[in-house]
Every structure is written in C-alpha cells, then in structure tokens.
Amino acid sequence: MKVLGIDIGGSAFKGAPVDTEVGKLLNERLRIETQPFCQLKDGAAAVHYIAKHFKWKGPIGIGFPGVIRKGHIGAVGNLGDHWVGQNGQALFSEATGCKVRLINDAAAAGRAEMAFGAGRGRKDAVLMLTFGTGIGSSLFFGGVQYPRAEFGHISWEGKAIERFAAAVVKTDKNLTWKQWAVRVNIYLKIMERLLSPDLIIVGGGVSKKSDKWLRYLKADAEVVPAKLHNDAGIIGSALADWTASGISSARHLIAGRERFRKIIRLFPLRRQANLWSHKQA
Ligand code: BGC
Image (cartoon, rainbow, N blue to C red):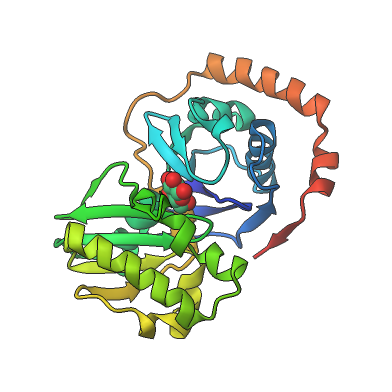
C-alpha cells in the first residue's frame, strides 16, 4: 500500500510517500519549517501543502506530538494547548480531501522500528524513546504496542523530564554530547526502574549521530539506535490502522474542502510558502 506519511514536530512538518510493505520512502521527503506553537490553520495549510507537493490523492498517515484518541488530540507537549480537544483527523482530511489517520509521533516511530528497524522480530519488552523537542515513548511486549505511553512526562524537579533531557536541551544549554548523556542516563535509570525493558531503541533526529553519544549511555537493557533514524516517524505514520472505520465520507470531505478553500483564500498558499522555508532534507 502507498501512503503519504507526515511527521509533525515542534519546528517542522516532514512528509513523503511510503511503501508500507517494505517500509521505505518512495520520494525524497519534504520538510516545511513552522513557527513554534504553530496555529491550527498554519498546521492544516502545511499538511495541505505537503499533499499538494506530492500531488497526493490517497491515504495520509500523520504522526502528531500529543496524545491521540480516535483521531482526537488530547494533551500536547510542545505544539501548544490550542490543539487540545481538536478533531485532528477531521481537520487534516478537510485540508487535503484525503483519508487521514492520526497517530502519536513516537507511537508511529516505534511501529516503524518494530516492523522494519531495530526492533524487528523482537517479542520481549521493547521501549522506544525519541529525543527531539520533547521525549516521545512507545512500549511493546510480544510485538504488541501499548497505546498512549507518555513517558516524557514523568515528573523531574517539578517539571516534565523532557524539559531536562530532550535533545533540544542539549542545543539550548550548549551541552557537549557527554554532558547531555548524563541527563539521558538519569532518565534511562528511571525508565529501567519502572519498566525493566529488554531493549531500548533511541530515536529522533539525534539517532543519526549515535556514534557521538551512544557510548556514554549506561543501562542494563540493550540500547540501540533507531535504524530508520528520523524517517521512522514518517514511515510509522503511514503504518496507521487503515482497516478501522471512521474514515470521512465523501460528502463530509467535499464540505470540508469547501471550508478549507475559504481558509486558504484568507491566507493564500503562495504567501504561506514565502513564510515557510521549505527544503528537501
Ligand atoms: C508529547 C508526546 C510526543 C513527544 C515527542 C511530548 O511532548 O507529549 O506526545 O510523543 O513530545 O514529540
């Protein structure tokens, strides 16, 4: 099956068509940089723009950095509370006219790694952690995923631990890899005490540079970098459950498209394209 996978992050929307049988991108991915705490209309327009770029009419799987329950957005870490309570699935299907499935971004990355990457064939306890603007998590046992695991929100010094150990903290505080790894080790220690996983897969953008920091990590579990690196989010988003019901009807999509056209008229795409820097990355 060919699905357009889109990974929404704190600073960019990234997408590419995916072959879900083999877990591979079919084109170079497109990255649209967005403002921090991007507004709903800008998010919808970015997704619209990515679909348009790939001339996409088929299904779209979207990884979103927040709790997702039946297409609705629950608690959000780093995109802003204005997304909370929205029917994200309807918003993005209206923006594109396509069938959309929404899934948590780390849950998506975990699925991709279990199907095609570092967790392939593993039936024991696997914890996938993604380090980026926040910390995403996904938990598997017997190859089955526990839904809505949000271990980046464990409390540490009165705040969510992602404020202490996410990859963005390394940049913001100008830490060396070794200094940042001290923080990650504190986090891993807590996770091991709570879950005793057999395998920990570390993902997110920093997994591409695992040679720089993986050697500093200390854990009883086997710790490996994500094999699909940052593409895990895009590939995993495409692996959403396409058999379940809840797909918008054609009538709903046409009505939605009309509503979206109005939004786009108010905020023309060409102007938006100038606002965003977009590059193939
Ligand atoms: C969000 C998670 C998300 C993670 C990685 C956290 O702030 O709460 O839902 O998976 O960031 O983006």
